[in-house]
View 1 (cartoon, rainbow over the protein chains, first blue to last red):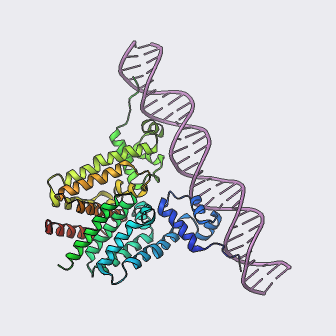
View 2: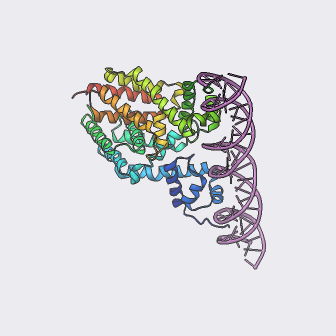
View 3: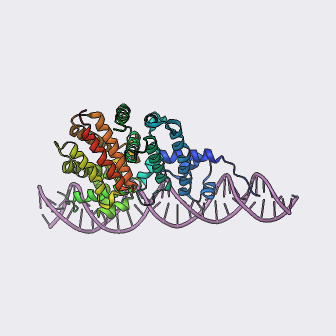
Amino acid sequence: MARPRSFDEDRLLTGAMHVFRRQGFAASSVRDLEEATGMTSGSLYNSYRDKRGLFEAASAHYNRTVLARRIADHAPEGAGIAGLRRLFLSLLHEPDGGSSGCLITNSAVEFGRKDQPGFVTEGFAVLRACFADRLGGNDTEAVALLALYQGILVLIRAGYDKAALEAMITQHFETLEKHHGC
Amino acid sequence: MARPRSFDEDRLLTGAMHVFRRQGFAASSVRDLEEATGMTSGSLYNSYRDKRGLFEAASAHYNRTVLARRIADHAPEGAGIAGLRRLFLSLLHEPDGGSSGCLITNSAVEFGRKDQPGFVTEGFAVLRACFADRLGGNDTEAVALLALYQGILVLIRAGYDKAALEAMITQHFETLEKHHGC
DNA sequence: TCCATTTCATAACGCTTATTGTATAATGTG
DNA sequence: CACATTATACAATAAGCGTTATGAAATGGA
């Protein structure tokens, strides 16, 4: 039929994802993306329409891999509050000290309410549902954990004191377990 | 001596602050700032060195006015946990539905750990100190509130469901008051 | 009134940006 | 082996960016 693609889409999206996560959408130039993915801009525009199209694909890739895998690794179904504690603590031990932050959090802030990418809303929903389930159905507390989670990622991205965050997370889940159901 | 300035610096910084808050630093063009402040780029570069200089001035203005005033209005010294609840709930009733978010939160995310503007660190410290004081010295809980605060601002900026946030805040401070000291 | 000094308005600069042509290479099918 | 089709590479384009130069306007002091 036609000439086949010569790049591995998984590696390509992973590379683009890292760039967007570290620099944000606007500050990531097409040349940055060429370097990180190894593809030239011509192919990029041919395959993903434009820079925004590549961003959408890379973000979906983020939800599919990074987010889903983090939940599966630390707080799978049935893991309860202890799983959630592991999930939160895992944020502190990311490579690079977590200085890239979370693509969902970063994008939620970069794009305002207006033209918000769909994967942000979706990521929020996935997290809230996960939290509510592991808490045993307490949806209001799930919203609190969603906000806490986003805030922790803001602080980590800003290079905030890790020890203080760890102590805070530990104590928060301790009292959460203690008062669970009272 | 010399020709006097013909602009009101307070109004100028307020205008620039709004632009940076709504669009972020990188996405705010010098021409946007000209429009919002009424000054021409020549004067801008003469008075503030460059775009980043204007940003620093506008951010300091933010900490001095918006942040400090919000604390003074809702959670002044001695206001206790009830004051903190008012402070948090006030975030939900911002003009424009709060779609501009908070300049501190937004900037913390936009600039990573590297070349983080000083006013971000300063704003975090002011909030943490305020929370710790109004809580009666519980510093670990103050860090939790700092993270919760940042997370709420992320969600508001993204246009998250206000009713869910309000219910969450109300319940969070209710249990905070109930278990205070036990 | 003239001068030194600083602000202001306008236009221009060089550079980077996202995007698009154009021509070439590589495939499966006839 | 052609052919249609798609991917790739490279060059070019127009627009926008932050920044700077130029010169006029406005002040207080000599």
